[in-house]
Image (cartoon, rainbow, N blue to C red; front, side):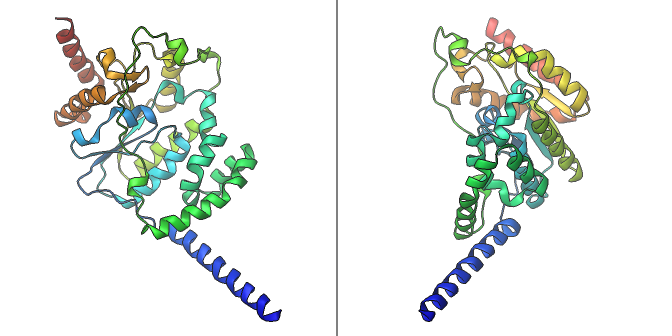
Length: 312
């Protein structure tokens, strides 16, 4: 009996040491290094994920993830910047619905805690853990096993997380013909909804993080269909940006002229639309877009040229 208890104690001790070792290795030795040819990245949710085909944009990597709030993007960006001193510019998706209170569900809602908390828990500070635990203790505690499994898998895979931090999503579907946008997205009285304070706090943290690393930070709004429900919050969207992020460079591509065939749905480009937009965006960068005093003026001029071609 004593031998059995001793063997059990030894087994538990070894298991505990293995788990602790994997957790510490994941926390301090994870590799987020990108190819040295990349000087720019874009981070955000599915809007940027489906718009920027980084195979068509020189020196550019898409590190966006569907449904990922600024909260989780902050910790991803922190690790990427730490491991990639060659980066010069970070583009951050900033769209209409990022500002509304429902976006907080992308921070501590069950679906997002289950999906993203186990990935970034190792890199989060105590205050951020406290935010998740305070707002959703059930799913926070329920994710602890997944966090441990994640650390074991990370170590087993050689600590390389480069391909686990997002990428371009190629959508092959098309916007339905003669569709009713209210059938795709439930209409809401967006302007009456309070803003997402936590989500926006972490957007501010991302901006400050980039500046601390000496990296240019640029807010972008990806191309959107004219029926996009988020346009109902346009005034609130502009107000929040001016009041909170008015000193941050902003590029608005929401009115990029593209036919319905280029959309998968009102808020996502499909592969055809992304190809057209990405080639155009790449050329703008090559033409010195970011060096412009008023880069939006150049964007508007170039979009007007396309509009002219489409109407002729």
